[in-house]
Image 1: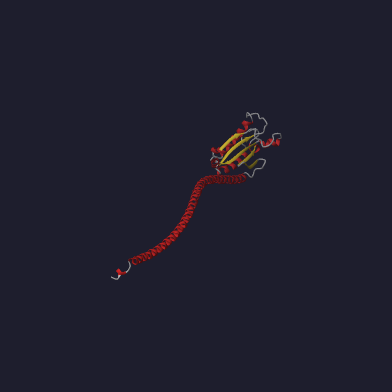
Image 2 (image 1 turned 90 degrees about the vertical axis):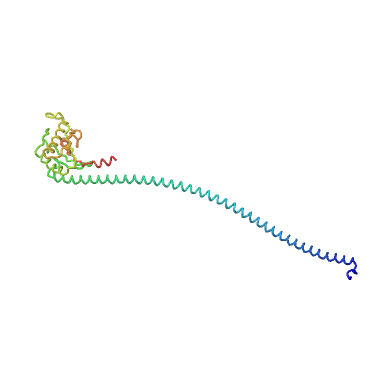
Length: 280
């Protein structure tokens, strides 16, 4: 055959040469593949490092955010606690203010009622004085005076209008004056009446033991005329004697002693509502 004629060493050398060519090519390709993989691995490692750094930075930011959130939470809790305390204090203060306002309103209502009662009393006394003045306008000032003092109306009658000297018997002119006054008293049933007898300091002798007895007897005589003759309600009337211990003028002159010898009919409006209000 033809092949048998080719020398054996040539054939073997060719095979070796072909085999060498193939191995070199694969080696080169393998080296190229390894280089490519190495570069890819380097890129991957670089990317991984970047990712790790980014992750670490992100973790740090996350930790900072958690710390900020924790501080915000603590601050919020503190503020909520303070707000709760403030609201509680505000409620307590509001309740105290409400209670104070209630008491102030009650006090103001009492003051308003008191002022209304006082105004009503002044009005009653002013009308009463005007009525008494008209009823007794025929008498001279040295016989009778009508004046207001301390919320009371005084009808002061001198002895020469009412009694003979040293006597407790009311004369005709005195009875007439008491009759005119009784008409006013019976028209004002809410008015309370006190009759006070007064004397000078000159000791007396005769029927009465002393000036106490005389002043009391004169007050009692007038009360009897008011209640029995002129039908003034006895429950409204008080009789008292003050002797010479409540003078209107010094007793060291005849004129002063004459002023002190008097009987005062003191008229007072009923003050039950006023006293009730003041006692609350």
